[in-house]
Length: 312
Image (cartoon, rainbow, N blue to C red; front, top):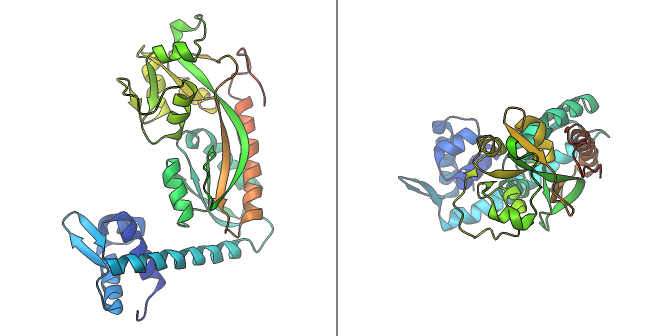
């Protein structure tokens, strides 16, 4: 391929992943005509079509698929070289592309970013909130450097570093505060509100209740913990949320918070990154900051007075 540029490779990768010129242009922060021109020049240099264009978007030709595989490999190598450049010093510095799952991001990110700015003034965090499956995909593609999510992810290409455990609490209408805390058998009989498909927290809650994820449900599936808590507040049902979410999500809802009897449901929060990353030492320093923020948030959750509270 003649006169192939890094810009063209990045544009082509975005177009191959996203499927439309408009989405690829937005992801690359360029205009659609500019991206189209670069792709056209790339195809002319290749001497063969890379794309099949249709009304609903584009798809790769067989030749385009082979080029895309090699383009992704090239971008991964370039990202690793960038990692090496960023690790020239002993402390983290430069851009940090950090992904976070939605059931952690709103509660931890403010304190994490504040601490990172204090500890590592040369660091510039670029934050990405998305579901676990998307974050793992972006990690493997080199689009983010690390992710904070629930473990395990069991990806052979990724390192997993456990940071802290966090229990789930039961959210009920305020008038139910004096009632006995239901066990998992009783919970299955109640109207349990959960996050929609794709959230790992949904699967964790279903696992605790011993309910199959494929079981038909005529209950509310919300897009956020905030929606679930507000619906509980008006008497629609009950829900489970992680400890770190309690101070924010319950402050404007008429609900009560209760702990389950042992064994209490919990999740392990950790950080993951590519085993090939050159930022291992720096990411471990960042992970320690995240760990400390998580432990501090748990202590400040206001749950220390609830029966069954434990520090571990």
